[in-house]
Amino acid sequence: MDQQSDIASGPQGAGRHDTTLSAVRLGLRLLSVGPLLILIVLILAIGMVTPNFLSPGNVSNILAQTAVIAIVAMGQHLVILTRGIDLSVGANLALATVIGGLAYRWADSAVIVMLAMVLSGAAVGAVNGIVYVFGRLPHPFIITLATLSICRGLALQFAIGHTTMRGMPEAIATIGGASTFGVPNSFFVVFAVAAVLVVLAKAMVWGRWIYAVGGKPDAAVQMGIPVRGVLVSTYVISGLCAGIGAVVLAGRTQAGSPLYGNLLELDTIAAVIIGGASFLGGRGHVGHALIGAIMIGVIRNALNLLGVNIFFQMIAIGLIIVIAVEGDVLRNHLEARARSMHAGQG
Image (cartoon, rainbow, N blue to C red; front, side, top):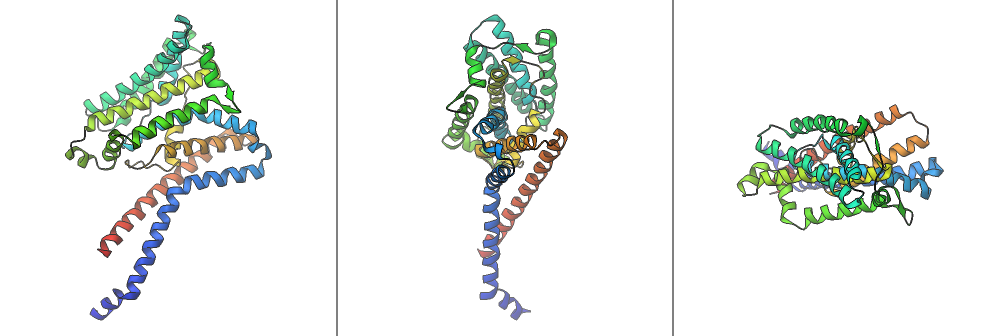
């Protein structure tokens, strides 16, 4: 037995160990860039099958349709980084468009209307964060599910005639519905939001706190990180993004409606997970939300061009979510394997 152990720990055993470790590292690299590679392959494949898919007009249409999901998904991404979830973003967006519609009837000012929508979204986010953190709730699922229902009810109550309210200032219509050099103005808003969040997450201490809170909450408390403030701030930003999304959607449709944002919470969660972020928190970046949102837009647009029934589109998105979650499970397994192998080398 001792001789066999010596052989296993000799040059051949060490070689197999190095080969396995290299394979694990390669698997982790592939999983990290997998969503982007899948998106590129998907675009190329659909482009060959459907010639009109890559036409400038259709690409612009995809970007315009994806903008709202992308903006709101970036806020959802911050919440998921902290191991949370925000189910209220769709209803929050709907309420914000209705508040914007009411503000437009009070003052024909783009600034006032935009502020009304953005502040409305941020206020709902603050309620989510404060009740979750200081109410000592076991999970944010509870309060965000409650505010989903409350916001949808308030939107229906406040909307004139309980239905769509037509009319928005021209500047908001330009932001949401016009294009510049063939690129929808709404996607410039996406890039602006992404740039701000990247700076906050990568260049400021607050960003490192988010990753610490999501990665190891107990250790974050011991390090003196203001965990409660960090958690509340992520829900405020998630609500803020819902408000910005409301500005874009209201501008594109030139209306506010209590019916907007239906199932948007599922689309944003799907975008974050499909893009490669982890439900376990502490891992991911804004690019994950953008990749996932664009992937959802590409799939839906392609299936529409191919004449696929909308019910099958829902099935396709669901299957992709399952695959993405399984990819996250595999990544966690490979990371644990890599750590144990490194410890074995030590």
